[in-house]
Structures are given as C-alpha cells and as structure tokens.
Image (tube, rainbow, N blue to C red; front, side):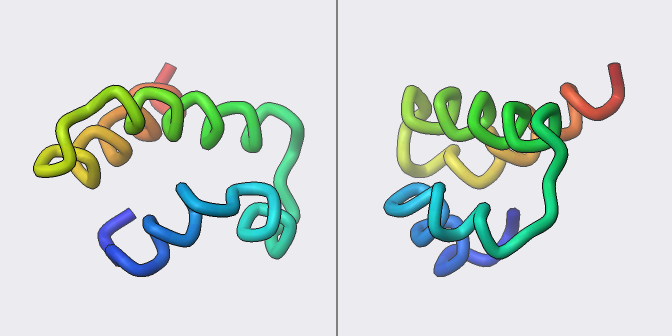
Length: 60
C-alpha cells in the first residue's frame, strides 16, 4: 500500500498482480473495491485512500 511502484502496477494490471497471491474471493473483492475507490480519488490522495479503504473493509 505504501510502495508507489507496486500501487501503479496494481492499478495498471490488477489481474496479473493479484494472480501472484493466494487470495480468497472476499479478499480479492476487497482489493478490487479499494482500487475502484482509489480511481475516484485525486492522485495526491490515492495511497492514503487505498490504505483507508482496505483497513475499513478488514476491520468490519
């Protein structure tokens, strides 16, 4: 979440990047929802927005 290169790769090719991890369907959906929120955020706030979206989802 804090590595800008990883975040850029994740945004550019989420299926490829997420394919490298063993995620449950729920975990994958959480990341995809966070990426969707991220796309709606100003670029200066994207890393913070992704972090918050993932933490909020995991904490509930």
